[in-house]
Amino acid sequence: MTIFSRIITGEIPCYKIAENEHFFAFLDINPLTKGHTLVVPKTEKDYIFDLEDDTLGEMIVFAKRIAVALKDAIPCKRVGVAVIGLEIPHAHIHLIPLNKESDIHFGGPKLALQPHEFQKIADDITAKLGCG
Image (cartoon, rainbow, N blue to C red):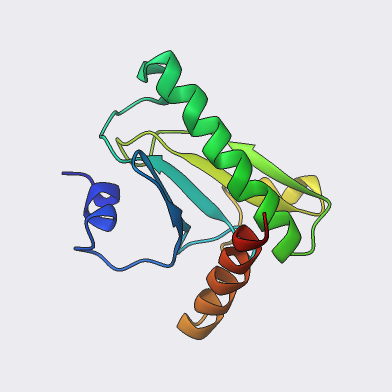
């Protein structure tokens, strides 16, 4: 069972943004920028392009809804999308609020946020989801 599956089942706590029957979104605990969110399918599949076409399409539409709320909640020029897939064997999409290209540099330093900061960010994004 991957760490993401353990997060989805509640075995590992997270700052949840949204979920539906097939997908789950939560804040990355090692964010590149405030609001850095991960979108994952609830079923384990190592590589995103091994997902069935319908599932991949639904995942992108789910991620779009999160990205729109994220941009409304976190001041940024764009929400960047990255699929790397090397670090955890569970397909996932990174949604990263961007103000400059270097904001999406995965080799750079990560933000160190306190639990109350993560919770406020999650609450702000979730509140924007309710408006859409």
